[in-house]
Image 1: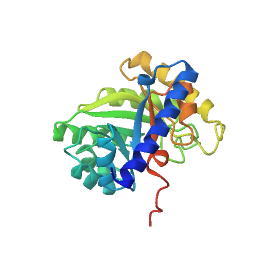
Image 2: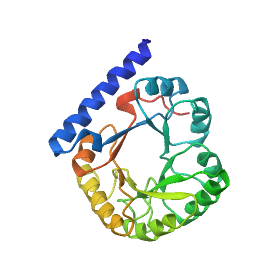
Image 3: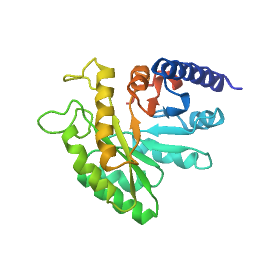
Length: 239
């Protein structure tokens, strides 16, 4: 095993221990929580090693990095998640490799995703990104739609050809009433998920929690956690 693969294996084992312990503490089964490894800024060689180590879900947030990486790893049994703010001019490229887009937050994006999914003859899973720090604009600092905008967007995704409404995603806010209160933020997301499932019973996915707060996400009931730094190490700064 190479030094890098050994390092990744050790980091994965530590993250696995954390998720397992969090599940035990929350009275949940380990299989209720899916680990998504966020591979942004890291090379395709790391993705290949992660796949060899049993990782099945990876996430990217910039199409210009993700598209060539996904192409280089097309032979691997991976599910690709797009988690960054998505501009409509990148939608065609993203639909080419992403199985799930976790950052759906406006009607125009739904329309663009639907059009390209139909063109590519693919079904793309969609999570509505919820901004718990949404201000008067109805948008969050890092994208997302305010809680009162979920229902309308969900109905739009649910009725759009080529798209599948999978659930909700959030990032713990840095400002507003939930700043520094990660578990409260994730519990709020779970309440919103319960509301969503009344109209869309299949939208059961709740993506929340990252390297620093995955325990709080598991405690709140998240089905998916997005972990980058704890697995791959501290990222090099992007120029």
